[in-house]
Every structure is written in structure tokens, then in C-alpha cells.
Length: 112
Length: 114
Image (cartoon, rainbow over all chains, first blue to last red; front, side, top):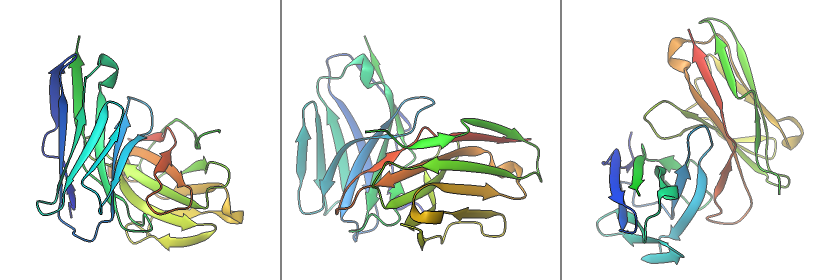
């Protein structure tokens, strides 16, 4: 049961350009959407989140957009830096963060 | 603040053997999670604790997996007997109170079952 989907397993961008990572979900009851970043041999670390009552949240170089009608969210990284190279997971949960569901991840490579 | 601590970092066992993982969450975090991450997939929730009570264990294979969180602080996850398909990274996470508060993950235990 894949309630959260990341259809692109990998993405490669040039340093300084924009990285756009996409995520789709099927459960309209999700209240929070989060992005996590994972480096090899480390656990995922929280990056940015958005509540279902908003359509945009920005934190420095990172912006998350939510389109509830399309059940789609995206993470924009501008400008991309080589240190951003990692696996990015999209996650979604209900009000109490019970049963947070994760996508399969997208591996981002930022080339110098 | 100190992060989520997990041990061991790596474990190799033969099938049918047993194994246990330990987790110490961030101080003050009442909610603790165990996730299983198989290579190429996202983390999958195994069990969620609120203090020392189980909130959700619907995806825990209870015939072989067990978990406890005595005293509502640290937790152990056990597999007995292990199968080849249990090879994965086992991640522990904890969360502060508040709607939408993010999970904080440990570095995980990589289990290889041969």
C-alpha cells in the first residue's frame, strides 16, 4: 500500500541551478507533509514541512509547495549546492503523526 | 541536545538466530518509533510507543518481532527467529509533542541475515 509515492528514483542537476523533487499521495486525510534528507550511513534528518492548510512554506534555499487538489507536493532547492547531494524522502502523516508514511526516496546529485 | 542513540551500528547473523537492537530517544520525547528500511525503499513503520504504551503495531510481524519500552524511555526491538528478508536498516525515531512536530532519527542498525 503506497500512500506516498516518489516516482523519480534519481535526479541530477548542475550546481547553482534549481532542484525540483516531486511527491504524490493518495490519502486526502493527511495533515502534514515533511521532507527528510538522508546521507549514507546516517538516519534521515528533517528538512522542511508544510501543513495541509498551507500551499507554500519557505526556509532559506528550500521551498515546499503543496497542491491538495492534485495530491502533489514538491521541494525546490535554489540554488543547488554539491552538499545537497543526498537521498530525499517525502513523508505524510495525520494530526498526531501516527503512522507517518514515507516515499521510496529520490537520490539527488548536484554536480560542481 | 543529544540525538537519538542506537546500537549496535551493524549486525550480521545467520537465519533462525535472534537479535536485539537498542534505542535511547531524545530526552523528554514521549513518542518513540521503530522503522524498517529495506534497500531502495522508504522507511516502514513497525511500532509506535507513547511513553511506555503501544500506539500502533499493526505492521509489526508479531510472530517473530517484539518491542518494549519499559519505563517510557529507552526501547529494544527483538527479532526471533530471523529470516533472510529481515535484512534491512532498523531506524529508531522520537518526537516531541505538538501537531506536525518532525521525527528525529538515529543512525540506524544495519542487519544482515545470511
